[in-house]
Length: 255
Image (cartoon, rainbow, N blue to C red; front, side):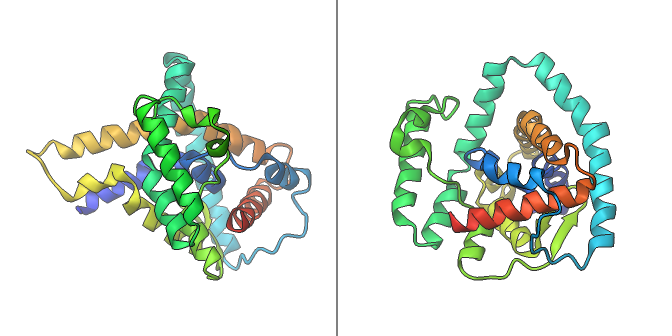
C-alpha cells in the first residue's frame, strides 16, 4: 500500500471519528441511547478513565473540534440540502452492509458463532432482498433486527486486553490504545480497502478516494448530531465526550 493513499484514508476517516461510539454505530446500528443519556446526565459521574495524556488529548480534542465545526459541518449541511433523505439513508445502509466482514470476523474470534450466523443472515437478506444493502430489510425480521454490532476493539476487550490509556488522535478522534489497535484491524477487514493492494491502469486512486469520500460524507449528519448531543450543556465538553465514549465501549464489550 502506498503511504499517500493511507494518509488520504486517514483524512477521510475524519467524519467517522467524530466520536468512536458513532464509528461503531455506523457499522451496524445506532449506539445504546440509555448509555449516552447516562453520560449526558452527569458528565462528572465516577467513571474509571485512565487519562495520563490529558494535556495532549485536550489539545487534540480542540483541534478536532475545530475541524468538525469549520470543515465537516458545512460539508454535512450541503450534503443534506442536496441529497434527498431516502438516498442518504440508502447510502448509510449500503456502506454498513459492506462492513459485514468486520462484524463476522469479530463474532468468530469471540466464539459467538450463533451471532455470526445471524450476521450472515442479515448480510444475505439485505444484499439480495435489499438491493445490494441500500434497503435494510433485516429491520423487518425480528431475529435479525437487533443483532449487536461487533468489531475488533470489542474482541480485544472480550479477550481480556486492558483498554490502556485514553487517547485522542488528530483526525481519528477519541479512543483508547486497545480500540486504536482494533480500528487498524477493522480498516483491513473493510472491503473498501481491499483493492488498495492493486493498481489498475492508474485509476484506482481516484476510485478509492471517491468511494471512501462518499462513505464518510453519508454518515456526517448522524455523526455530528450525536457529537453535538454528547457535548450539549456540558460544563467540560472534553470530559463529557470522554465519559460517553468509555461508558459506551465498556457496555459494547459486555453485550
